[in-house]
Amino acid sequence: MSERIHNILFLCTGNSARSILAEALMNQLGRERGFRAFSAGSHPRGSVHPAALELLASRGLPTEGLRSKGWEEFAAPDAPALDFVFTVCDQAAGEVCPVWPGQPVTAHWGQPDPAAVSAPEAAVRRAFLDAFVTLQRRIELMLALPLQRLDALSLRREVDRIGQQ
Image (cartoon, rainbow, N blue to C red; front, side):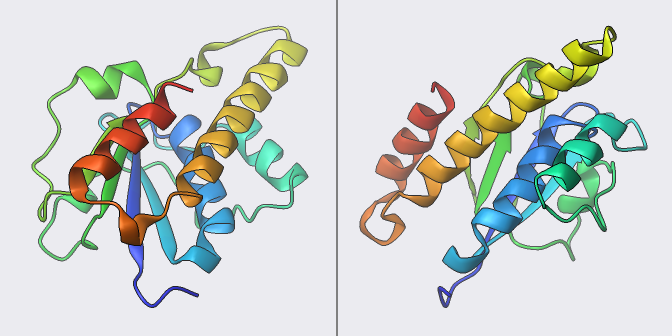
């Protein structure tokens, strides 16, 4: 495992679907590379979408401890120092975010909200799977970056590029 822990925060409005999926994926895929992920929302729904939990469990990813929470937890003085902050939905990207101490690398990795799909059940499952696959691909691309060799501007450019894929 890397000596340095890189804290990453995934933001969305409701913190019930995309940001939760990203948190679980990064914690699983990035653990050996020294990444620790969190998620939060500007207006948290208060619960994680059941389809998100079902999908994560079906893929063998832990769901314990996942909860819908506000981003103010990560702007508090005793919060973990953040190295990266990524928005995964358009609403959070357009909102005024808190000032994150330490100037973390930020990027927008937006995609459609699977929680906005209401019926039929197969369409909901497909929307969650699509979000999961897109986030997994982006996280894998990020984890492949040579972090030690990239200066701050190059790193920012690379994570922005990943968000376009």
